[in-house]
Length: 142
Image 1 (cartoon, rainbow, N blue to C red):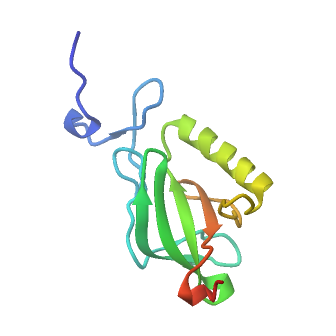
Image 2: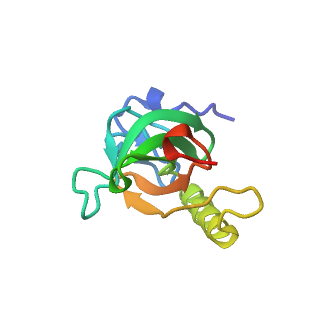
Image 3: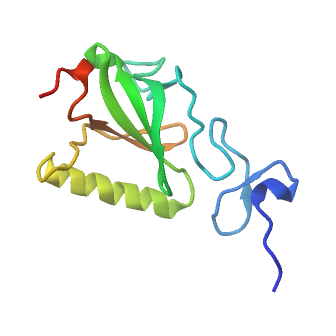
């Protein structure tokens, strides 16, 4: 049995995406494992009417197998704080899991001690899902 080398050790300048059939070029702003590279101050969700970005990343709150969660200011609502889950762009299974999570959170709509999903969107590196932050001093929560 041969030992598998990590993508970074392959030496071909490409990141392995976990898909069937080999390597694909690395996406700017995404590391070799498919995780978004968090840079405080950067903007995400460049959809209309926010061509420069709707959400300003303040800091990373956590990370896990499926992606990272970042604290952001929402430009549409005068800097209201939201948590945005940045789903890994590979493998495709993570996207399916994220879509299932979005569906369940929409059905729960913040009930039963769950976060309320505000919306979901595609950014240049994959599916994203902002969530309400139940209490934070800047949000004037309960």
